[in-house]
Length: 166
Ligand SMILES: [Fe+2]
Ligand SMILES: [Fe+2]
Image (cartoon, rainbow, N blue to C red; front, side):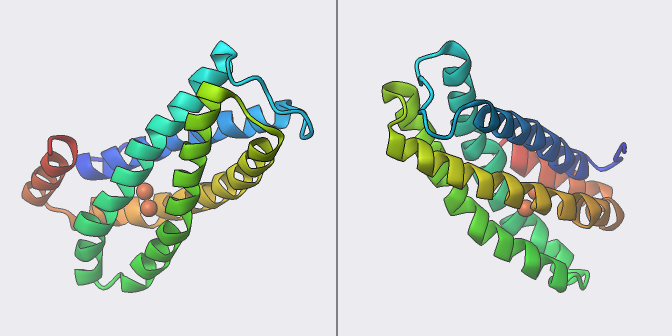
């Protein structure tokens, strides 16, 4: 789907990047034995852990904040407060999961996993991957097309400038 509005496009692109990362996290967890913590110093593992940490900061934390501060109020003015209520509630659950996962990833990429941190990583990753996939599906069906409909060109330019260049 190609969107005419830059803001709709930016949200869509962030979502696609996040889904790619979630697939990598999912695959990483599935490939490793549950009862043997993976070696955090392996280059591929270190790269995944550092990508995960960076994505939680940008594609998750900043993206969520922009949706809540800049986009949801516009949708609410257009009468879509049922939708924003659900999405906000999901952010509240997903953000701490993502931040916990980023912390675990940060520690593991320096020190490796312990039995305990690996068990926690697997649990939190499972909840985060499932939850965020569902959330993105909802936004791709509701939020992104709504932005495309509602925003006029000036509003779109202002929003995208505040997202990308602030
Ligand atoms: Fe989003
Ligand atoms: Fe969201």
